[in-house]
Image 1 (cartoon, rainbow over the protein chains, first blue to last red):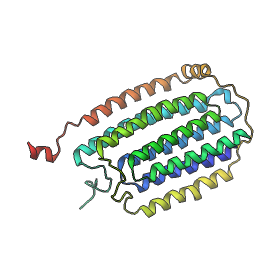
Image 2: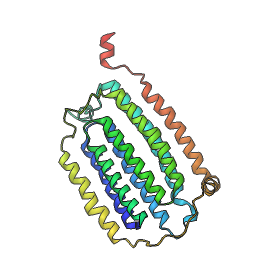
Image 3: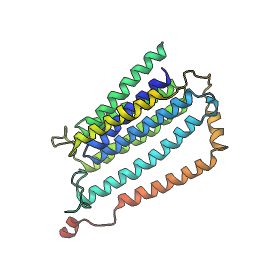
Image 4: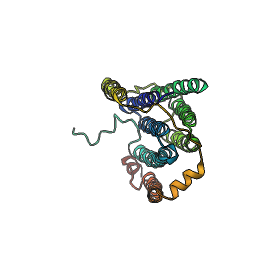
Length: 103
Length: 173
């Protein structure tokens, strides 16, 4: 397990998240694709910290803790918005949410 | 050697879990695959000696985010099995192309060309040190984060309450 392996794994996971966010039409799936991307970034933080010269400074775990908290806030607000959108339009299909598009 | 094998097993589980989560037709199965992905990532954090982060990962992601996503799915779609409708958005070819292009032309070359550290320094995992760091140099960040979480909580409640009535509601009344 080298730093390079960790980074490649994290890049692959990020792109899987990107793929989900780009190609799925369900808003909830898009939200959890974003979670996958955020987790890939967390893996990078931890990997760089582990292979750094001074791991006792704990910068990696601290940054990861902060991103996890921000991601939790994001998912709470995101899901609340999805539910509000569902109440209004009776669907979470992103293809049908095109009110802003010019007819 | 064991470390090596554990890393590869966890990496394969994480990639498969993420792939199933984004491609599965049944949304509930997708969320469970996502939970497996989170668990594999937590194992990787343990392997990289970030044991507190591994615990937080399980608590926050599998415990809270996973359940929240399940609830959001149950409150919106009526999931009775595989989604028979088209699950991919229009122009999904460009989605595949963009995601693959980012991986192949942006991320992998960047990793290949970077001068990466090869050695690890010894490290004794300690939650006490983490707490001290958080309370001393990063205390402002911690406070801002607390504010953000409070604001997000209030915002989530306000957004999901929904004061506005839909057209159907007005017609029904």
